[in-house]
Amino acid sequence: MNSGKEVSGCLIERAGRYYAVVYYYVEDQRVTETKSTGIAVNEHKKREAEKIKNQLIAEKRAALEQPGQGKAAELHPVASCLERWVDYKSKYIENTTNDSYHFKLQSTIRYFQKNNMMIENLKPRDILAYYEWELAHGRQNVYKDGKTSLSRRTVSDKAVLFKRFLGDAVLQGVISVNPADQVSVPRVKENKVEKITFMDLGQAQCFLNFAKSEPRFEVLYYIGKIGFYYGLRRSELLGLRWSAINFNSNEIEINHTVVRTKHQPEHRDTVKSKASHRYLPLLEDVKGCLMELRENQKRLGIYDDKGYVFLWNDGREYNPDYITKLFVKAVKACPGDIPREITLHGLRHSCCAILFEKKWDIAEVQQWVGHSDIQITANIYNHVSKKWKNEHGKKIDGFFK
Image (cartoon, rainbow, N blue to C red; front, side, top):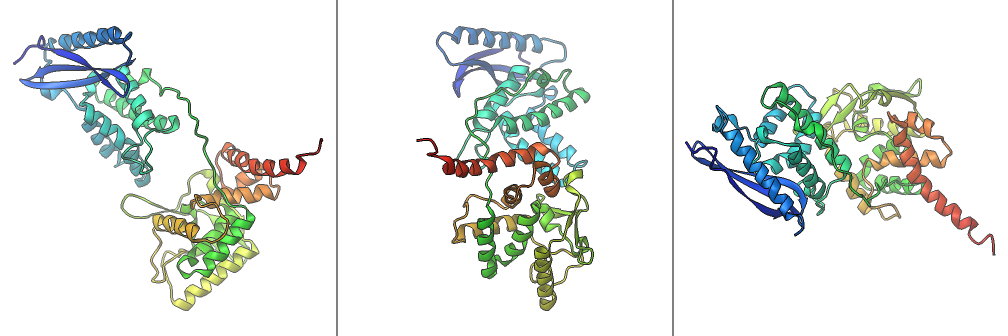
C-alpha cells in the first residue's frame, strides 16, 4: 500500500477563486480532493493560497500516517451520505416535507459529487465555499428561468438542512465535530426586491367575467371568486368540502387541505398553521356561487364520496398543479388589463389588496386570510400601498406653483 508521504497537490482557479487540489492514494487507488482556499484570484494573493494548499497537503499526509488510516472503507463521500440521510428522514416526515428536502438538497448533492469530497475531511472553509457556490450558481439546473444565483434566504434554508445532516453524522460517530457550526451564509448585496403581484377590484371582476364565459376556465370562476373573497391558499381551495360549508348558519370552516406531493395529491385534516384553521362568514355572493355550483354538479351527476367542492365532471379530484397551470393559461388568455405575471397564489395577495383598499386594518386582514405572522400581512400592505401613494401623489402634484 502506498504511504501517506505520496501526497501532492496544486492550485486551480474556479469561479474567481483559488482552489487547492490534493492528490493521495488509498489502497493503491488515487483519490482527488478539491477544496476552496477562500481567496479570490489575485496575483498578490496567490502566495497566501499556496500556503493554504501546502497546509492541506501536510494535514492529509499526517492523517494518512495515523494508525488505521488510508483505508477506503473509512472515507465516506458527502453526496452519498446526504442521499442516505434524506432517504432515512423520509420515513419520519410528511410527504410534502420529504419532497421539499429532495428539492432543496439536489444542488447540494450535485456540488459534493462534483468535488468528490469526503465527510471526514470537511472543514469550515469547505462549508463556506459550498455556501458561496450556492449563492452564485445554485439556481442553475434546478429552476428553469435562465438565472444562476440564489437569494441568501434560500441558501440559508439549505444551510439549515445541511447543518442538521452533519449534526446527525456527529451523533452517528461518523465525524467528531460539526464543521457547519462555525459557519454562516455570507451576506450578499441583493438588488432584487421581492415583488408581490395582485389584482385590484376591477381587475378581479374582469378576470371572473372572462373565466365564467369560457367553458375551459369555468372552474376558475368559482375558485377565483372564493379566492378573491377569502384569500384561501391553493391547498385550502382544493381541500374545501361541502361538509365544511353550513348554508343554514352561513359559515365556512377552513379545516382541510389537499397538497401536492411527488407522486399524487395528499388529503389532510390539517391546515398549514394554527392561524390557518378559521371560521369565516358565508357571504351572500359566495353562497349563491356555491349553490349554483352544487346544482350544476347534481344535474350532471357529479359525485365524490369525500365530498370535495371542486371536481372534474367525472367526479375526479383536481391535481393542484393542474389548477395552477390552468390559472396561468387563463391569465394569458384574458383580454382585460390584468397583471400577466400573477399566479394562483396571487388570489391570496389580491384578497389582501382589496381588503386594504376597503380600509381594513392589518390585524383584521391577518385574521381573515390566516397569516400566522402579522409581518407577512404588513409586507403585502407595503407593496399594495405603493400603488395608492402613486395615485394620491398625482392628485397633489402641482399644488404649489
